[in-house]
Amino acid sequence: MKTVYFLRHGKSDWDADFDHDHERPIATRGQKAARRMGRFLAKTGQVPDAIVTSTAVRAKQTLALAMEAGDWDVQVRESRSLYEDGPVAVLAVIQAEPAASQSLLLVGHEPTWSASISRLIGGGAVRYPRAAMARIDFEVATWREVQFGRGGLQWLVPPKLLKEVL
Image 1: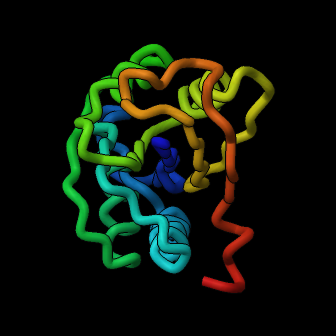
Image 2: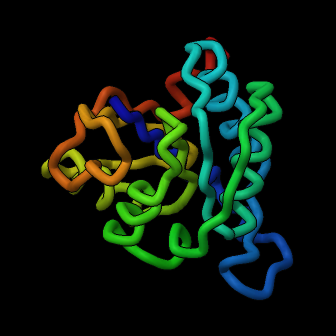
């Protein structure tokens, strides 16, 4: 079995000084939510084997805060396609994952996350709040076997559900 986690970046700081959307940071509320999600994965024993993040500042900041709060020690790679492209590019990132890992965390953006999850689980509307995290399991032996429609959504957790417990 292979597991893919999706983490959407935390709330953006639209008042910050940035030249391009790619450079927009996360707001204080987004920082708190990112830390909460990092603790959630750690406390539930679901820290991934590998991570690929969008190259956007807000995605990388969200990931760094989650990793720090959850005390994860996981190698991180970056992919510009998680910033700019859609579900087909997301599937390509998943399928390119090295065989040694069993679980993969992707950090990125809307509307790509909703569309990708919907396609991976075979349809349905997915509402994906900021800093939310989802888990999809695939009954496959290799990452190359991951295909649209073959995944099972195990959970989708928005950070506000964890506000009182983490």
